[in-house]
Image (tube, rainbow, N blue to C red; front, side):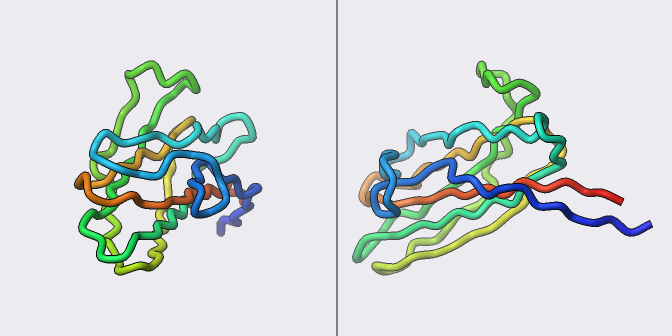
Length: 134
């Protein structure tokens, strides 16, 4: 029996000023987390995550990202983290876009960090949940 994908509403879970938001630019290796994405409340099975990253002129740092999974929206430190999920290589004064899928969890957030302390990277993270029907 074939499945049908039903897409939910896209949501922005992290946005820096370069993309019209107020979240902090990504700088340094400490990292930041996006807002929590709730898949369970509306019966979603997963989500498509799109990360846009804009690098400065003559960049040296890359953008690393991972996904933190949890069964509760509280994220009290016991979450499972996929490390690293990937890296977006720097681009001279330009934007790169990376898309991946998350599934089989109730809640997640995207962790972002630079792999150095030279550059300030503008980032936007968009999430579109989906459910499979059939």
